[in-house]
Image (cartoon, rainbow, N blue to C red):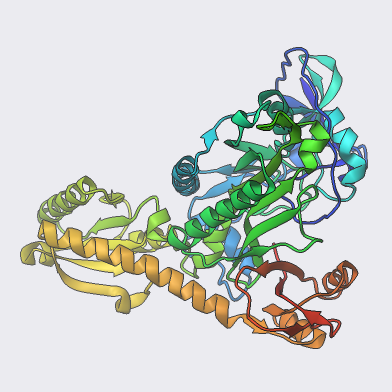
Length: 548
């Protein structure tokens, strides 16, 4: 039996949160003996000392609402629409413990495409994958708690393992920063050991009180990169390089036109010198922090005593970075591209890029139609497309059209008796609804159809990005006064304006409007500017928005 407790927010730690500028101090540790933990049976909130049982948690799949064939319109209730799409497109379901989710195969397949792309890029840039333990001694959190008061979500803590009270409580990984730095201290001795570039794919536990599937859950999946360098310049170059990887992924794979920039002091990770971010505009115009990269300076290396001998034999502290993207990116894809018909996936991220729906009325028609559809499936699969032949007989063609549209499949190929006779097919684009998105009389000839399909998928990928850019740009308002900012935010838009005001004034904006500084964009207008809040000179514009 293992028993978990929840730490109050003032004693918690969250590497990739964006809500504090407090510095942190950590100390190394050693785990002296093996730990055996079986099923978690009791969870207790320290703030209330009340146990939480599975029966009080999220509704089960059977009790969750399901809409047959349609979802709540986005314009009516965006949040309900989002949950309907996740359920109807079979992306995820609620877990038996409150705040958890079960990622279903189709949803996990999307995450796998995130992993596949980033894994290649990480290795191309010299990083190696490894894995760090899930359990972190409580003394780490206890030592640094006063430095991160009010910073992070609540933590889960193991107090009993193998039926016995533990000598030291263990935190279930909220991030691996502490254990990574402890190990770096053991591995780094000389300048020849640098740079040290590692990444891990792992799960993370943070006891969120308000959850939303993919966007914010008690447990989620992510990658977290950690690097150590000999100079400040190398660390800065690394932090910018990795945010660049995220930018490229967002535009080229996910078709999400993120705005990249630097976080304000208020929003910088506690323990970092600088935090860089990619911010995405969702369909309800809220911002989603889709990825972050931190230049940690020497803050952690000084706390842990992580030093190296330079070429002259002088002992110096390393300079570090950390960076992460999580399964919340799947939520970002849903909320950026989806429509009232359901999910809409960029072809580069779609588990199924093409669905073939054969259409027949009689048994005589069926044989020829299914044979033609099977030949098309085989040919397109052999040249590398991700394809599905839906020749099931339990559902009508119309039902299949709606179902695969709900799942966001970019292209649909329809094959009927007349098409077989004419050696042609009908092709429908998911991103262009109705007859406008249909093309008739497309030749079945292998070379032609392969070329046609490849080009249409490229067109859809580009179209989704173009549409998202237009939506984003049409909902960003340039402001020059605080009244203008408040008006823009009240209309649900992003406000972009010159800013050089204090942290207190930034907090005032949040308190009065619910908006925060999402970033100071890398792309800045030239010339001297005047702060919208104070009237003083400003060197940069900032983007304000309400966010997830």
